[in-house]
Image 1 (cartoon, rainbow, N blue to C red):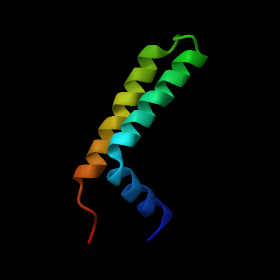
Image 2 (cartoon, one colour):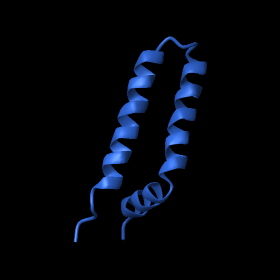
Image 3 (cartoon, helix red, strand yellow):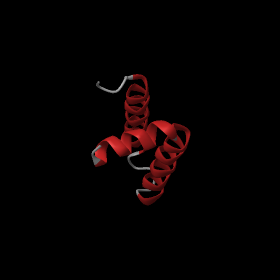
Image 4 (cartoon, helix red, strand yellow):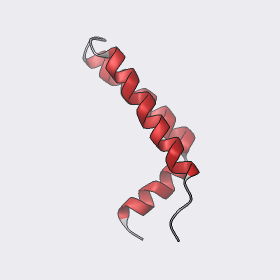
Length: 62
């Protein structure tokens, strides 16, 4: 099992914490940029959450 497989397993097991981390990271970026890129940050957060959800729904290869 490679490092990426281990990361996928960890993220799928703790997806609620990963979502919270994505939100927190977006808040930090918004704070550091004064909200200048808030729309883009929000889009990035949604994309990251969607990809995480996709990963959790996709069965691992045999």
